[in-house]
Figure 1 (cartoon, one colour):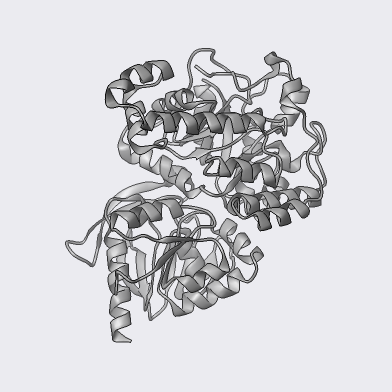
Figure 2: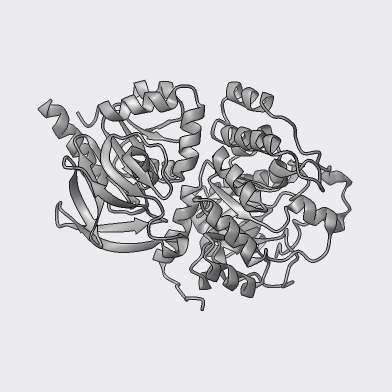
Length: 307
Length: 197
């Protein structure tokens, strides 16, 4: 049964684990073998999935929570934290994942949404949640529901970083603007952002989100990771970019390992062009990817669950 | 002496930012240490919480970082929290992995379980009024201490804050609580060791 913890201690533990993940790379994996490669390359956590976003995108169908035995296999293969995705609003999937003992749940637009109106009430869970956001208002709505970590919602599975950049720039720009407003202007601003006034006021005062702000969606190369880090991401999620050759086939293990290691180094040394050059040069190849500008509007995952 | 003490926080991955903010509240400006050559610019080092496997990989793949850090931790004052304690230990279990060996302890990783077993407790230490807040996140357990190691706090019968000479380690996260006693005692201890030298 889901324990109902609504105290601040609980939130501190949830945000606390996000603090531990800062500066690191969270990698999508589909089996124990990939999880071991990720851990060996220096990943700070793995995301256990049935299919990586690029496969979900190309194969279609309803994308659901991964099978518990798959997640369990990954949990027993590595000592780093294991995350798993549930569908937006699918609190029963979240209950199952919590019971399974995963370390973080990603309530993710990459899976097919289960509720067109509501997200999971994340305060009702002991396990922490990360949610995606395209802008500050969306980030604060998710935090209000109990998310302990925010990530950008760039187009997953494309290998095109353009929207991860857009969302990170949106969020940091909107935060900077908030800090310039007078107290009396924050009420109307909260209405515009469609976010709770108390959270808006907190961001205006501190100049940052109350939870760590990571980047995800389309990050495929070490340079991409360095780009979003320089734009303000405290850590990065890398999905299809490590293990996929294109949107259907996996690359070789040697290639995946070279990408994983290079992205980890680029995420840490994001301000050091000399090391970034080394990381770019040691890559054995990169994911082919697809340009987001060529996708039909209906194919965009980021608009799922944005209200 | 304290005012001139230059403190660094190892910033490869993990809770370095939380340590920086905590030190700021004590009016201490620390610097983030990303590269081996930075070690020469500091007097004392904090190794934060995070994933010890990720930090190990980066330390070993960045020039002579691992070797230089090994020399540093045996000569200069260090504080390791959670993953930092694992790195400073002389022996690591669950699974076995490399460590720096400046603290004669054996540490078992993820000894309490996963994130669902993370917890906050109020505990006792041997200083001041003794009360201390303990934030455990996927915490390791100190399962053996050598004869030179002093236990500064215990929880559930296990040491959770230990000291050996200039080096201290905690299995909990002092960087995630408002209680700053661990930092204060670590710095006092450095001052004491330096004046005794």
